[in-house]
Image (tube, rainbow, N blue to C red):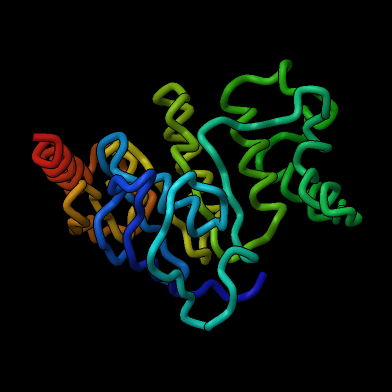
Length: 242
């Protein structure tokens, strides 16, 4: 993996002439987690898809720049809310899917290390229908890591999980993605308070920054500073929706 860069997206977006998001500048720190929150429809996923170089259905006027001057979209790994596993493929095949789609030979040693890291050794030959929700998300995270990209974009990847499994996946992702430039789009103030090294709330008027807790992530769910940040974020989200 190349060194993770600072990343900045600045500009505005429209769809069919209507404003999707107003002019903004969002900066992602190199090797750090940035959490982006906001109400539905304010453009969070659009920002993420623009960075990934994916189709948004709208028109973007602005620029996306990395601190090292290199192209951004070629260095991105993306993990969606849905695990998007191929139902007919095994765990091992799903994890190495990216290389196969590019016509490359997968690094099987790396795949096997990731399978062990995600505690999936006993499930390598299983199909997605044989896995729990948490196991499926671990497969999706391993597939994201298999790409070994310095920029990782997460679009509400844990929201469909129960509270215990979600906390476990947050811990695992924080450990596994250390050193990468991460943008996590989430609706959950508690998740942002646990994981964010930079926390930003997006509204139709722009961006508001919220001071994260000083403790290293992932933070304890019942830590006072985590709870205070969670409360501050909830207030910002309610004000933005008012």
